[in-house]
Length: 79
Image (cartoon, rainbow, N blue to C red):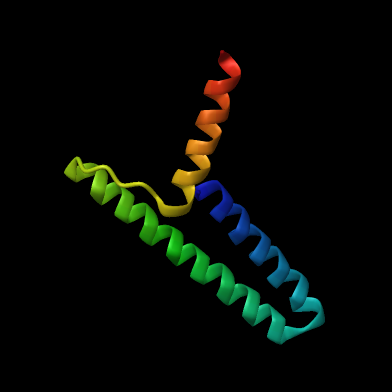
């Protein structure tokens, strides 16, 4: 989840830098998108750290489905 989020932040930042040359309003938009994604990632990370420190199991909503699918495909291919 955090890797995909990091790539999305990097892509938005790169798009903002490209837009700086062509359309300044696009720069502001993409830089805002990168900032919102960064804040969202920070909130999810802090929530995961908080849940782990309390000893409760918390599954990150989108990432858990992908991880289960990946784990099940690896388990099926081992047998």
